[in-house]
Length: 354
Image (cartoon, rainbow, N blue to C red; front, top):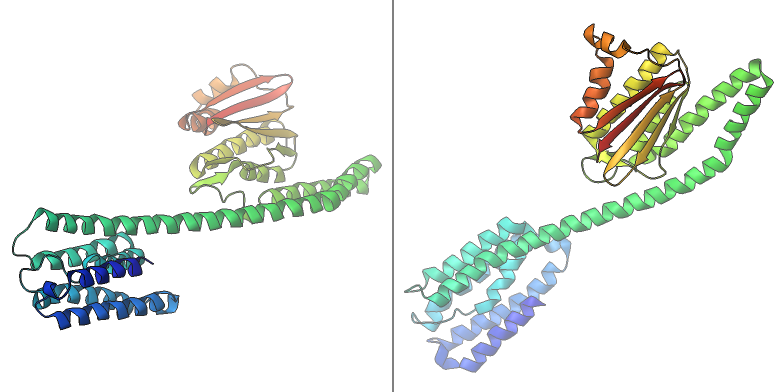
């Protein structure tokens, strides 16, 4: 559409100014006819992606430069405006659209430079035209690149939304069927005892594994903002450990990948302490809560607690599990780690800013 608008302007000016505007009127009108023919051809050629190759772009810019160069021969050395006039912006924008900002800059330099080389003196009008070409091409190229990036992000968001919807549907189906059956087998096996108890325990492990798989399915939860991952999915995998129960929000909890890895490492260190000091398979609970400015993770067990002074003795002896693996990691993330312990058990309250 732009090509035809600027062509109409060029043809209208040529007819309005008449033959007095040309030293060689016939040649001038031939060049205007070439512009009309090329505009029709370019409209057809650019319409198909298969035809929008570099040859077409080079030809488009080459014809524009040729029309500019022929202007003093047709109009005379004292010409005011080139034959194509504003028609040159069609090739400029084509290069900007195809080659983005660098293409717009190169085309602007070539077209503007060709126009200036034909002038006997540099006037404010000539400089203004050159300046507009130099900023117009790169700006259009930048905008096209931004639009393409936005379209790609929109498509990715649509795919993620579709995958999340499908994941939710599958989760409902699995929850209504398989998970309920596994939970029932676990409860009934524990009630019956004997070999059935082992069967119930295995059913419970498979239920936990299946819940974790649903939560982290298809990496949808990790497909958030670039450089972030879903902390809920990462923590959910810890429920595969014997005796560990993990509770997380229903939706993804996005954190920078490095921070999420550190939080998971801290929670794993807490669970390692449960295994070492309470017993293999001892019950432990992990709770994740998400707020706009922070995440809070609680790790609790029902062991005998930590005797007073035990942590200080361990740090003095060079055992830095708590001071470095837990408190040190959380402090590096700008968060806090609070410990509550007693005969009721041990609980860590980890707060990390988002």
